[in-house]
Image (cartoon, rainbow, N blue to C red):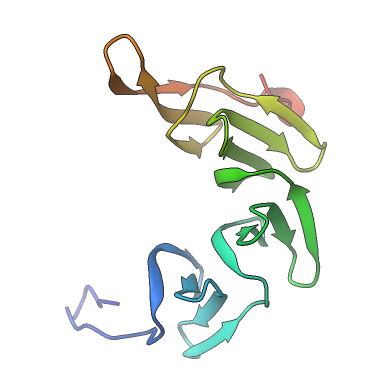
Length: 168
C-alpha cells in the first residue's frame, strides 16, 4: 500500500499471496493466499480473516456475494456470508459475475457463455473460441484466435442484456 499524499509505503498483508487474485471492496481487501484460501483484510481495523474453508482458484464479488471457482471441482459457487450454493458445474476456465450474470469460458471448448443466476438461463455468447474477456456495462469485450491470418484479435458485443435482463 502506498499513501499517494505522503508517498510512504506500508505493508498491509504479510501472508504470501497470489498477486493477480484480489479485490478491493470499500474498506476490505479480498485475496487468495498461496494455499488458495480466501481472505478478507479490513484496512481500518488491520484484521485479516479466512472467509471459509474451501480452496479457491479465483473469485469475484457482486452485490455483496462472493462468487468463486472451487479448486478441486472447477465449479462456480455463490457465497452469501452464510451459505455456499453451486451455480455452475462443469470445467470452467475463468469467469466474471456482474449484475447477477455469470460470464464464463468453458475449459474444454473455450466457448463463452452467460448464465443468468436469478432466472437460471444459460446462453452461448459466441460460436468461436475466446481467450480472454471483459464484461462491463452490458458489453462483452473479448480476444479470439483468427485462423486465416494466425493472429489474436480483439472484438466486442454490445448490449448483451435486453429488457428484464434477458440476453440479446
